[in-house]
Amino acid sequence: MPVPVRKAIFPVGGLGTRFLPATKSMPKEMLTVVDKPLIQYAVEEARAAGIEEFIFVTGRGKTAIEDHFDHAVELQGMLTRRGKDDALELLNETIPEPGQFAYTRQLEPMGLGHAVWCARNFVGSEPVAVLLADDLILGEQGCLKQMIDAYNDVGGNMVAVMEVPNDQTSSYGIITPGEEDGRMIEVRGMVEKPDPEKAPSNYAVIGRYILQPKVFSDLARQEPGAGGEIQLTDALARQLGLQPFNGYLFEGRRFDCGNKVGFLEANIAFALDRPDMKDAVSKILNNYV
Ligand code: UTP
Image (cartoon, rainbow, N blue to C red; front, side):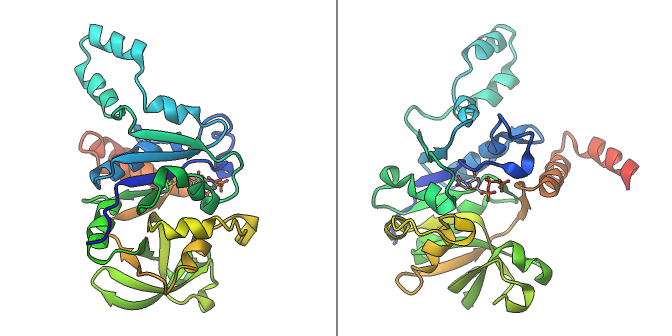
């Protein structure tokens, strides 16, 4: 059996320019879908997948994330005095075990690959998961849990993939698929944002990864790729052929909360998924369509 995945990296050092002015002083990852920040969904998904250590790669202006996963002493005291047990319970869900969360700063947002590399000293020589909070997935079972279950059979590097319409390949990293076994798809190559006519498939990589420690040695080269940024996909592509590399076609619906329309859609879908809100939200939506 491959070395188990116990740690996860949450890169939250990006600038979130597509959400300005909302993200001027608030991290993009603190934007809420219904009533929970994006980063909390990602943390809960990782926890449900058995992750024990959580590493956040942050940047300037991101302290709200650390505060979110800490005691709010005054608020908790007030809620206790007023007997608001339900609200207290919601707060308790945000509190990790002491020492379970670690934070490091990226210093400069030089790309996702660079953010992941900044976590290297926390990761050491074991595999690690990476979750991008702005890819939010609604499904019966968390995407990372599905991936780790599959990884425990095959090991190596793994990326979450989903099928996208042909005319959307230029918005994603696209894999060249090899052998397919159920939801597992061998990765033979990866191209960043190909035009539809040049795309090797319509399997797009989304923001869930399982990385072997060797990827960090490659990231250490600090080679800039597309847009002058240090790209995680470049480092992964250079590992092709050196160790198993699979895509996992996860079950669930993914929302790109890094852009406004995707974020709005996520809010609608998650609200419709909530028994306490479903009817009221459906009614409102009917007024608009
Ligand atoms: P994005 O590509 O969405 O970039 O990053 P961004 O800067 O957050 O947003 P825009 O494009 O300016 O609107 C995907 C994920 O990778 C993280 C981001 O925080 C986000 O979770 N990231 C990106 C970093 O941690 N560091 C980087 O240098 C770049």
